[in-house]
Length: 115
Image 1 (tube, one colour):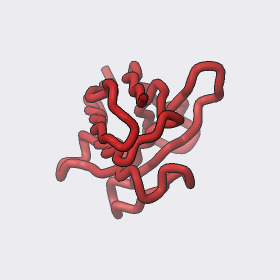
Image 2 (cartoon, rainbow, N blue to C red; image 1 turned 60 degrees about the vertical axis):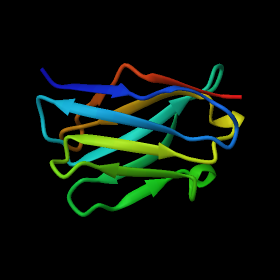
Image 3 (cartoon, helix red, strand yellow; image 1 turned 90 degrees about the vertical axis):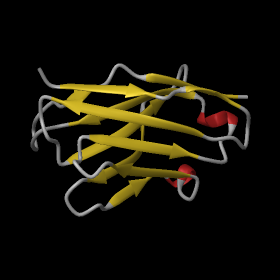
């Protein structure tokens, strides 16, 4: 089965750091994305990476504070979150898809709370 499993969430004080991991199994994806959803708000894309050329994308509000990276095998993706703010609070999800048009796969989510 294809699975994405997140880990690393937790609580942090404003200005602190949290590192999230997303481990893929059952398929070698070419791209990974991190989304987040705060209570009462829509899910939004935070960062993405192409495992082939290493190109990245960041939401404007996290640019310069968050860094998405991958392990050499391209099977685990990380989101290093620094200078955290209370509005970074939310459930963080890893997402990937096998090809264009594929509905894709979501991880179960990991909670990040910044106070």
